[in-house]
Each structure stands twice: as structure tokens, then as C-alpha cells.
Amino acid sequence: MSKKPMIASLALVTLGLIFGVVLVSAMGNSGGVQSMFAKGTNANVTLGGTPPQIPNGSDLKSINNIFTSVSKAVLPTVVSIHVVDKAESNDNSDDQGDDGNNEPHNFFFKFFGPNGGGGNQLRNMPRQRSIGDASGVIITEDGYILTNNHVVENSSDVKVTIYDHHEYDATVVGTDPSTDIAVIKIDTHGLTAAAFGNSDELEIGEWVEAIGNPLRLSSTVTAGIISAKARPLPDLVASSKALTPISDFIQTDAAINPGNSGGGLFDLNGTLVGINSAIATTNGMYQGYGFAVPINIAKVVAEDLIKHGSVNRGYINASIREVNDALADATHLGSVRGVVVEEAKKGGAGAKAGLETGDIILTAGGMEVNSPSELQGVVAEHHAGDKLVLKIWRDEKEIEIPVVLKPLEEAKTIATSDNEDSAPIPDDEDAVTTAKLQNLGIEVHNLDDKTKSDFDIENGVKVTAVNPYSDAAAQGLAAGDVIVKVDHKAITSSGQLQKIVQEKKTGETITFVAMNKSNKTTTNTFLVAVRLKKQLSDE
Image 1 (tube, rainbow, N blue to C red):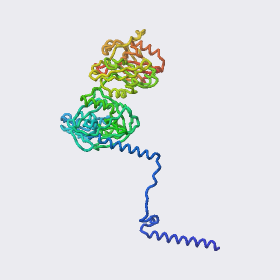
Image 2: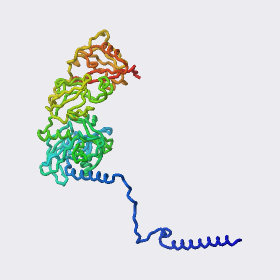
Image 3: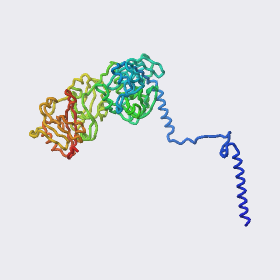
Image 4: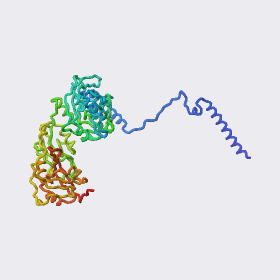
């Protein structure tokens, strides 16, 4: 065996012995093997790493400061409202004085807070009073407060607690079921009043704060964005007791829950842009969809209630609906925009100003209106007697019509139809009494004397059948309805209508002014625009 391998072997053995001695020595300490990595009691230990470099970090700090500054500024303007309802009788004890959970589970849109399906109310207590909590916003330094109609409409006792915890008895000044707005008053001075913003200028995606007292958690601030504007809530409107409900809500994803009713929705300028009123939910609690009454509407209502105790609202007195693609094409509008007048009520503000069935309203008061709720919202910002200029599309050109709005009392007495039709189209098809128009999906018949009498009309054709898969059906035309005009001209017989349809090409549109009855005494007029198909099948 050579010397070099032996030397190498001895070196390895020696190294192993040295390592073993060191290892055994370390294990003899109380920390075992781990003590080899300990820095010792007096070592300087720094946890965490270097903060990451976030672009525009200073800007993020500024954004945070905006939210905190707004919260500090507006919290003193929001109050807690404690409501005791009027006593209920034993006869109604099963469905009065509860938290709204007696409603069907699938009732999706609901008011919350006292009397509105939410809040911390006592349930099913015969001959007792329902108790609930909600919110409000101070709008004058001497104690006028905005809240919701559904919070106080059935109240016998209302108490208000302001931000500094002082409590006051409150008086209901006035309510407006149409907008779900109410004003109450406490006897004090020197309060911090909210500054009013402009809800018309809100942008979708804009940050807002919702402030109120959800679930008795006083002075709660949540944040979110404007999710939508001019949101119509037909299910909620259907549950309203208002004669003329206004459905024009701001939608937000800021968390709002039972108890937030009447609280404020504020923009990042610290101004009040809405009064929180309702939620969309399947479980009675926040699921990301809250709705507020625009402050521009609430402000007009509040001014009227404070001055007069009631609302002097103006009306156009017209039935309207959204413009669809077929109608835009038929009227050569160029794009789908505006709202179409289905009926300008006889003697109403619109009819007096010259508004006609088939007119397409493009703007109201200089603001674009592309849905009934948008027009409704603009009108709600005005009083009876105010002049509102409408820009309309008629006969392929824009014209302006100034409308002097009328109060509700006059609107109630207005007739529901206007039979001053233009001259009928000459009819060479009198022999045809029934026509099946398969490319429209409808069947019509000449009017009999009873139908003429029922609808108080002299001309038209009666719809006897409608294909359920047709555009006509989708737009609400149904058997029993009466078509009185075709392409804005009066119609007198089924044969005449058949001839007009035959002269049109597939893909072209045809417009009908139709009438139906919602009851024995009420006649409704509406507009239908249908694009002709090759042929529709009932299957």
C-alpha cells in the first residue's frame, strides 16, 4: 500500500473526529441542534423585509386621507332614528309589527328599516307596538332631518339621537310615498347640516361612502362605488302604496343593511348625493346591491315638505317606454336612444304642449333621457307650473317643445285616450274582415260595435291572436288589444292593414298604436314597433 492513499485516509478520519466532537458539544446545550443557529439573548433581531416599492405610494396615502377626512366631516350630519309604530290589533297580529320576513322568500327588492322589512323590530306581538331603528341626515342647523317615508309613515313616536349622543323627540313634518322621502324635525339649533351635492353629475365607478346605523351599529361608515344610475326597481315600485311611484335609484355596492334606511350616501367631496332606501337581497341582508334616492329629487321634496307640508310635483301626463332597435330603424333615428311617447294623455301637460304618440323624447331640460326612469327622475326635480323643455324626434327631425308641468290633482281627471286621429288611409280592401299576418305573428279582425263602444273609438282592428314567440308579443301586444294606427296613420279594416304589410319588405319595420284595457273603465294606449320576418312558426 503506497504512502499517499494512507495519508489521505488518515486525514479524513481526523476530520471526522473533529466534526463529531463539535456536534456532540453543541447537542449538550439546552437548545439541542437548534442552538447552533440561535443568535443569542443580546442579539439585535429585525423581523420583516424591506417594504415593496409601490408606484404612486404617496398618492395612495392621499386617497386614504380623503376617505378619513370625508368620514370625519360628514359623520356629525347623520343621526340615529328610533321609531315606535302605532299599536296593532289582534286581528292583524300575524302580519303586522314584524321585520318583513313574512314576505315571500323570493321577494328580491325590499325596503329596510322600520316598516320596511328589516331592522331590529319585535315580531308577532299582538296589541303591541313595533319598534325599529333607522337613520337620517341633518339638512338644516335648526333641526330639519331627511329620512325615508317607510321609516316614519306609520309612526306614533319618533326619537332622534345625534352624533354627540344627545337625544330628542322628533315631529314628522311631511312624507312623500312616491319617492320614499320624509322630513322630520327636532327642536334644537347649531347642528352640522350636510352639504348638498349634485346627483345628476355622479359617474358610474365613482367612489362613495354610505353612513348610517345598520343593525344598531351607530355611525357606521362603509365605502363602495356608484354601480348604476337611474335604476328602475319595478318589483319595489309594485310593493309601494304610492299612487305615482318614482323609480329612479342610484345603485351602489357600499355595504348597507337594515337600519341604514334614511342614511346618507356621500361623494368624496363630502357632499350628500343620495338617501339610502332599499336593498336587493335573497336573505334580508347586504349582498352587494344597495339603492339610494338621488339627492336632486330628495332636495325638491324636502323643500316642499318644509314649506307646505306636502309635495307640489309636476307631471307631463304621458305614457312612455324605451326605444328599441326596430323603432329606431322605423323612425330613421340613427341609433337606439331616447324614450318614445305611447300616449300623451288628453288634456295633460304633454298633449297641451303638442306632444304626440310616436314622438321620441331625446332630452328633458337639456339632459339626455334614454329610459323611462331617467325622464321620470328629471321631471321629479321640478314642480307643477315649472316649464320643462323637451327635445323630441318627429318626422325625421329634432324639434323642441316647452311643457308646463301639471299637478297630480289635474292628472287624475285626465282622460286616458285621445281619439283625434289623423284622416284614415283610403281603404280598398273592405271585403277582407279577418287577416292572418304570419310575418308579424298576429291575426286581426274588423271591429264590431261592442268593441268600438268599449274603447270609445270609431276606427281600428281587433287583435284576435298573437304568436307567443313574435316580436309583437315581446312588446306586449295581446289578443283583445285594438290597433288604431299603423305608421302614424289611422287604420279602418283588416284588409287595409294586410295591404300595408304586403307592401313592405322582409326586415322593414312597422309601427302600431294600440289600445288595451286594464279594467272596465281604464283604457291604455301603447306603441309597438315590429320588424317583418319571413314567416313565424307557432312551434
